[in-house]
Length: 237
Image 1 (cartoon, helix red, strand yellow):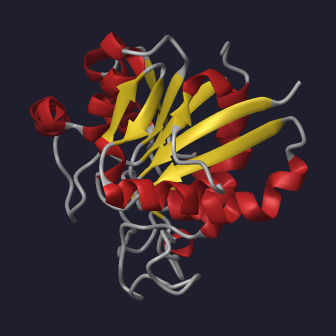
Image 2: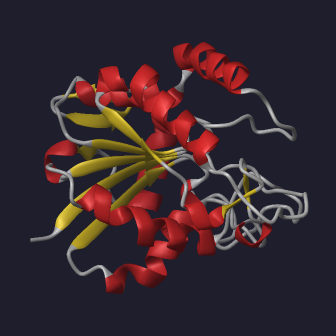
């Protein structure tokens, strides 16, 4: 039986969508449908009659581009929702910060967190499982250390799940460990040659600037799919 996964994402969706185009043949029992826009555009969807519908002309034009022709998110058609982007697990800037500082920043940002807003709209419709891939940790410019301690990062994911997303029943997933370096950064190999999200207004395949460090490439998307998709597809939707 095929598991149908609805993806609602921001610009970070590009690496997942491009990877899926090349690996979906390996996942015969999973179907992904992408609804994405840059920035917080997807938060313009509103719950109506059991679905999430666009309320702006712009979003009505964009959704069919990424979804393959659909302009409404009918949640009854899916077994789980996967939010991509919309929340950070670590500051998107260089430097190391104490756990206390980061946790307070996460709490302060919760009031305007797009992921929390979208999850809340989904919950107005039903109890479908919700998973979240946070914005990728920023690409590291530092030499890789001999040892990497991901436990502090994992504690932040646990904090997000227990203190911020528990009330809406959403689960933040960990970034795959093999993509992480220097504890809170992404390995450079996963940022090189990152493509922009195609929403029909630019040439397909357009790339981010060479030193853009926040968006990841197709290789990152493929690793994430290979390590996390089973969890999403295996949820009880």
